[in-house]
Length: 230
Image 1: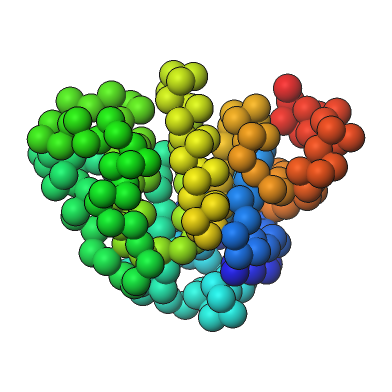
Image 2: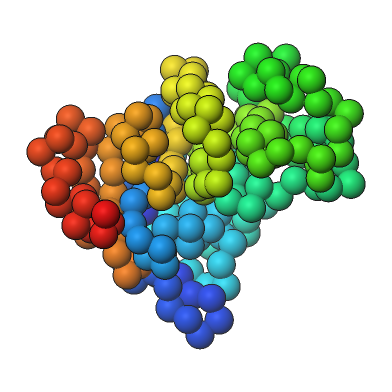
């Protein structure tokens, strides 16, 4: 579904990505692992066209994205859920949820989203600023599920959340996979990533240095801990 080859990216004069190469197959959950500053978030933003400059090849369902603006990329069926969540504080839960446009068929309706996140149904009229961190994360994920995007890019979805909410996010990702969504995940919490991912790409200094399949995870733990400095 997603093919990235030789991806370079810059913020101003800062050269962040140095030839990223990776693939994501349809229906997979793939995680980008690496230390802080390795280039994981920049990779997601580069796929979406949200960096100052990018070069290389980014193909989504065999269509080249590298010269497209981010709004055109979103309309092709890719959604990005940023680490800061981007909840509009002046809008309530329902208004936040209904804000993004539907870009194609196949998205979840509001009822399905409330089934995934019952907390949101109870907080429909609550302002964005009055939600807990976990509720904001649920809303941020729920919001992109309405759009019809089939590739979901989630940046640190468990950051700063209580363990019970982390478990709920994990169940949600598993449910979305069963429904045919493809997910590219940036995650510092490796224990969480283990519960949801099919494959892991290790990122160092703006490039992929290794790939580990979940089936080979147990035999690769020492190597992964060395990469992550665990």
